[in-house]
Length: 313
Image (cartoon, rainbow, N blue to C red; front, side):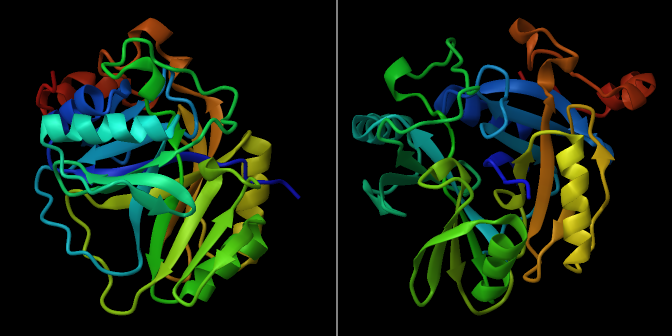
C-alpha cells in the first residue's frame, strides 16, 4: 500500500486578488509562484504562493470570486491552516510583525502540542503559525531568498490543518482506514492524525462541532490536497476511493499536476495531487509568478481571458 507523504496544497476563496497578493507576499513573505486562472472557470484568477518553486506542501492557493459574500462559520468545513516557522523566537518575531502591520492575531499559545500563534488574513481566513523546533521538513522545500521576511524566521511550509466536522468518527475512519493516517491523540471532541509519524507537515486535527454547516465565502477554505508522487500512485488511490464508496472525479490533468477530487461522509472536499510536473513546466524559476500563465488548452483564449481580469500588481 502506498503512503501519503504529506500535504500538496490548500485552496481558498478570496474576494480580492490584489488584497490577497499584498498579504501573502508583502506580509507573510511568500513567493507568488503562479499567476493563472481557474481551469474550470477561466474568468477568475487562481493564484499560488509558496517557497522558491511552489513545492508540494508549501502551496497556498486562491480562487478570486469578486462576488464572494461573508463566510458564515459552522461545522463540516476546513477551518484553520497551520504554517510552520523555524523556532519559538520566530513566533515572537511574527507577533511583533503582526502588531506593526495591523494584522489580527492572538497571543502565543499551544496548539496540537506545539507553541503557536493564531492570526487571520484581511478576509478572516484563520491560520496559525507553529514552531517546527528544528524538526525535519521535506528535503525539496526551498527558501525564497527575496522574501521580505528575515531568513531565520521565514515560513517553511504547511503544518497542522484543522477540519471541523459534525461526525468526527466518519472522517477519522476515512483517514485511518483508507489513507493510513495514525491517531496520535484523542479526546471527547478532538483527535489528531498524522500521515508521517511525528511530523506536522502531514498532520490533521479533527474537531467535532454540532450545528449548521459553514456557509462558504471570502476567507473560507475550498479544499485540502494531499500528496502522491506520480500518476501511478494517483490511479491507485482513485481505485481505493471508489472501492470505499466515495464518488471520485477521476484523474484530471491540471497541467502543473494531476489530481482527483472526492468528498468524505461529512462533505469535506479532498484533492489528491501528484508532485509533478510542477510550476516550472512553463516558467523558468526566476520568472515564476510574474506573468499570466495558462495551460495549453486555454492558450488560444488568452486575449479573451486577459480582458476579463483586473491587474494585480
